[in-house]
Image (cartoon, rainbow, N blue to C red):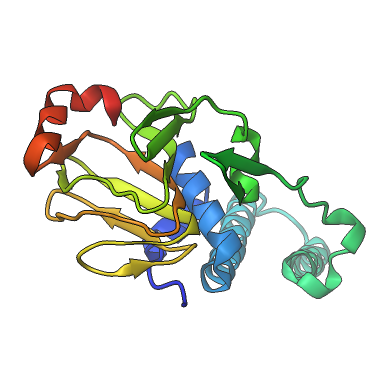
Length: 236
């Protein structure tokens, strides 16, 4: 199955220019490792932002160096062309020396007897401490972003998260395995953003590992799980 859920173009653009928080930048980076479509968009947005920054710098130089002679202006044009060619070379996969592309070491994470490969954006977090309730295990990333919590979330085989909605916004990036809810079936790479307008009961047959970012607790809506709402801020 193909990835169906992606970051918005606005989010990809913000990522390209470094405007996302650390937790969201990790999510977008990890998604782009699994999604060629979004990786290509980020590359284009990055190139566009670099060109705009260079154009702005050139315009500023023109305004402050009005006394430069015609010969120096011609030399400046040549330098612009050289920079443009250099930027094109940098952005081209074919021209980047392979020796400069050094991938991070392979990192795997084991949870409840299952092993998953982590994307590069998360490999530094392969030794987190886990806490578990039933088939659900969570390891929080030490990002210190106030009320925003970033975590690795594992749901074991034939497990589920009780029926809930959201007090704030929750991002779920599926890293491995599969899960489904009342709305769809999700595959690795799916980038799912939900808020208080969404209500669902995620469940998995083969187990799954997700990266989640939440800015408020879940709100459980059915059965005994509603008792968890009293301590929701502690466990989200």
